[in-house]
Image 1 (cartoon, rainbow, N blue to C red):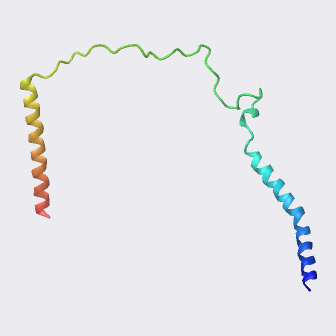
Image 2: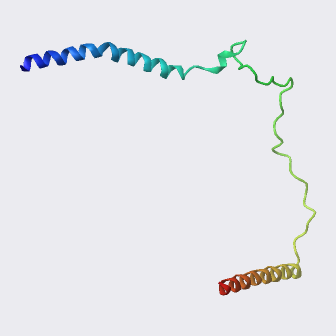
Image 3: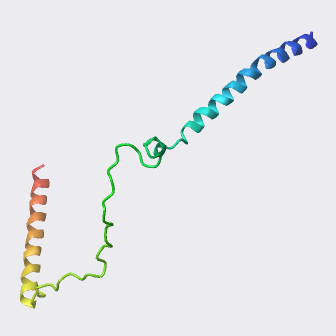
Length: 106
């Protein structure tokens, strides 16, 4: 009996071999289809259809060594700096008071 069941298994494997070969071939075709390039679709074979044409003159290099003009602003004086710091501290304190008042109201 064991001999007959082995023959039945061999027959199933023999029937499956052509299908596995076809499946492998199909997987290769689908997988390699993704490697195709769209650059060969154009009339010249190198540029895709619908792309813009290049400009006649090549673009120049960016101006990397051009320096911006000197600033016309001057540094704050000590009095202006103290005034600006006092304004910022007053704004900070007013905001903190509003937040604490809102927390107390809840």
